[in-house]
Image (cartoon, rainbow, N blue to C red; front, side):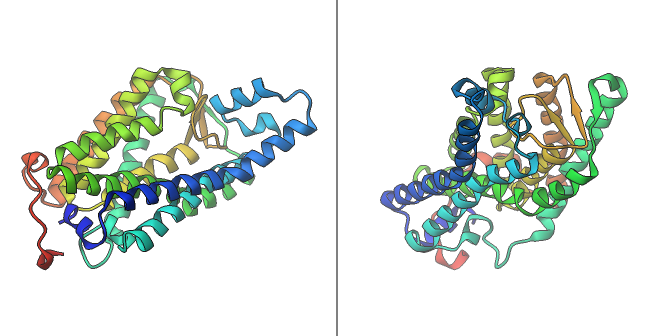
Length: 316
């Protein structure tokens, strides 16, 4: 059902090409405000040059450039707002489909499923973090600032989900459905989109800070887990909730040097271990997928390797 939704509109190669162009165009337009601010800072302060700009790209610390973290975070998210607009235009006017077709074959989006996934994944993060704090409290420092935290919460809850939803709509929705229509199976689109998901994060500052191998393993595994829950649940809602919970957790609860999201969180850690991050993610994923399989009565796991049935207009 989920993969067959691709047939509700146009599905030609040129349509994918134009839509991807629109997404990249929106992404580029969304970067302009932050680019202008950084260029203005460089003009006003002779001590800020290309070396400092490169360092900022590797570790986006807005405070080091005299920019309020919340304002910088908001400008950073603008690129995803415009990229989402580009994707919407492509889906609606080029493919002649509804954006809902990237989420669910049902008549309406199940928001309770999104919120359930968000809550469970967020709680899992808190539980594992509490365990680490119990064993090595010296690695943590409380940095809570109420004045900065209130606007941060508003940005994280109202705007950050646009960024996470965009990535899910693009990879687990648009690309995975499109590849499924060509490859006629579920496992190949799952693997391809997961590798693509890792590739777009290859420029993240975590890669430079902690190493390509371990961080790419993390991002590709994240893509696999998000794709698995999408395929097994036959909808994108669980992945939307989990991805939002991951990034909102990083924006509000815990920060570390080299993180792609640099905000005034409640705590920060001085010793982020990427291997520990990866292990915790895998444990959380196993627990979460098990809970989902029981709660939503998923098909047997070999469904991941089954062929996609031919499109039947009576089923969508």
